[in-house]
Amino acid sequence: MTSRRAISLLVLLYLSLPLLAQTVSLAGTVKAGETCSQPIGHGLTLLVTTTSIEVRGVGEKNFAACVTPPYHGPNPLDIEPWEFVDKDNHPLPDSQLQEELTRDFSFALSAADDEKACKELNVVLYTPPRTLQDGTVEYGSPRYREPPMGKGTVTLSHVTLDHLGKGETPQVSSFQFSARIDLPALGSGNKRAK
Image (cartoon, rainbow, N blue to C red; front, side):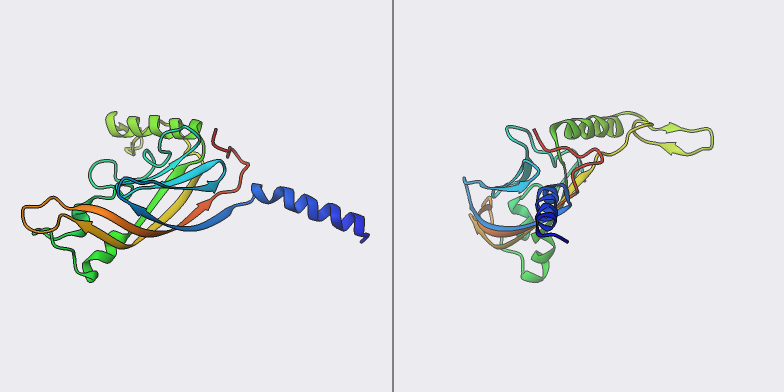
């Protein structure tokens, strides 16, 4: 193989890397009233505060909200102080705290995919299911196909709480986190966030 051809192949490989599936690992520290914002690829940003986890495109809403269950009640995207305390507002022991520290979520990759997923969620939640001729119960739109999704895990550590004790309203004042974000390959319907 000539050196010119080898260089051409390397350039082609380099240019195609953004089209391949990617895993992004990152970490940060968050304090009350602050936002840790880190780009994760595909034009998306991970935003972590002491109250929430979000994935956004530029100027967009949270692309994880409509595709991360449960849709009623506590959700992995919400960071609530009561999750870290007992009934008397004292910090949970480490053995009970571990299950509250890991947050798994999904997210749309574009505003169009997010809108499509949110519309389908409304159909699933608020439209009665249909019974098909064979007796199968069908929820949602008959021809809906879920768009490609990213997956993420945020793991909290060193959670610091304020206003502890009986009669107090606890608050999360800070924590550290690590995140693993899995982005599917661009192509086959995937688009960068706009």
